[in-house]
Length: 461
Image (cartoon, rainbow, N blue to C red; front, side):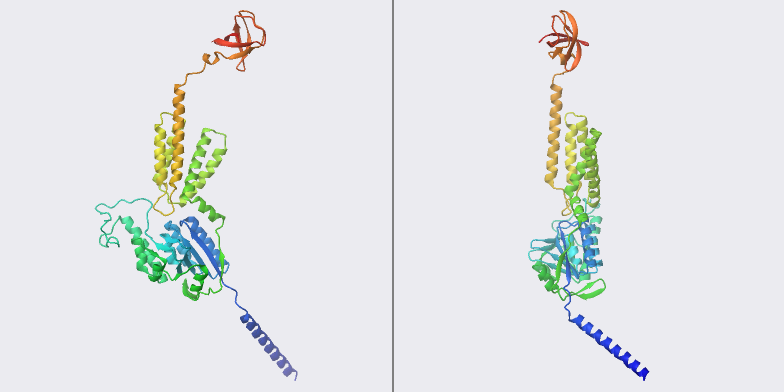
């Protein structure tokens, strides 16, 4: 009997536990799910090391925060290929779907931006935006190979034929690599690969509506809520996993760049890096000319190190850097050993040409502002003209020194002097032995009329 009661109690307890578990599960299912969070990242301006680092950090933070997807705003004229590839690699390796969105109206995803948009799981554009012109450009001009003909103006709009490719071997190598790269992205996302190739070979461009018709993008959206509404329910692939986007009632959270990304964005601006380099060089020169002042040397050293760090992240033309160094050296030589201005003129010419060539102007967004170069060159010319004028003026000026410096100078007798006698006087703050033909009391004012060695002939003032 006792055994039967124990079995009944155990069965009853198990039934109660099961019912409680089912009730708890039902209550959990009845609760509405939390709204998904969408991370918002902005890539604006030239694509460079700062932009690549910012996207890397922001996307990782979004993954750690449990975001559902990333909306990547694009408004860029292009940038460096290496930085673009870093961003694309991060998009392909991300654990979240990335919705590329060219916005606001008037924005563009040109050059490197086209590759980034093709890498995103969903490509979208706002009205009045465009993309394309993805032809890669090199840092310096390349010489055609012997026997090669340059591009002809009569070539068709698709460029040279496969039998007679235009440009040097290096140009063809870079272009073909870019074509294969963007076609692989187009095939991965099932988009128009032929137009992608035309964007690289012929710098083709499309507006938002044209891109939608040709299968380059999937969505034309007026704003982020419109984009999320149209993307909701779409099937995408993240790595090897297929998933459906659940973006209804999503909360958008902006991920701003941190201090390091902002710092890199400032110093990798070509104009700012150029000014840092000049400030560093001039600071060290001032310290060398005035040793012990410390401040110019310390500030110049810091600016030079930061400027050199920025240069290694930028597309530097080393011929331009060498010309700049030669120009600054000639200007310093003109200051140390002034002449008729030949060294200075050569320095200004070399400096200006080097400044123009320092960064490759064919890379979108990576050129020094010509107004800054003109302003610095004008200041250098003005300083050179002033220095030359001072040198010529000094050569024409009468020589002042020695005995001539003392003639006509006033002084004061320190003691009484008899007629034709000698005494002591204070002249120009110094004690001098003086000779006077007239008697004068102590404290009398005198004027120098002649000097012989260390003795002065004076008369009453």
